Image 1 (cartoon, rainbow, N blue to C red):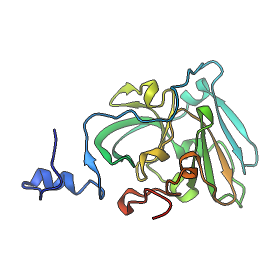
Image 2: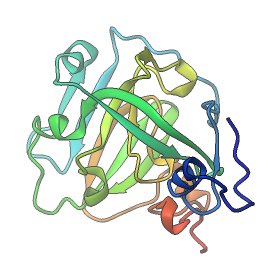
Image 3: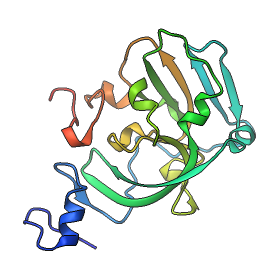
Length: 203
């Protein structure tokens, strides 16, 4: 399927799809592979997910413990800052809300730094992080996500550009105030709302 969104949509289906594309985006059915550096090798026997920073009692979940948490499946669109959008994928994983039941935030916490393999990071406000639709996913369209897409676990924050949905997730550091993550240091926007075209920090 391909639509030319530089012309005016001609039928009801094209109009419906076009209405779901943020400004400057184009539709793809394939899931492009985009990341910095090599795909990490992950040992599930030693893998942990850290919950730390401004919490009353930091903890780390093993992969087996994580897999015991309640799961759900949602259908959602995603939008990449490199201008592709992918519609109606089914994503399965653990809701952020379920993970947050395991820790108590200190009152001064306002933001979270997402930590991933290779030292990769991404920053989010708590308002963006705690939204009901956000998950920690390991499955797309009923199949495990591939290593190049973030296996064994990636964050899923569909209302922001997809770089905020960090691959190869390893933990959350809760913070008082914001600070830039990896791509934000290189000029990407601190928030990244696709509907506002918040691609770069100098906008």
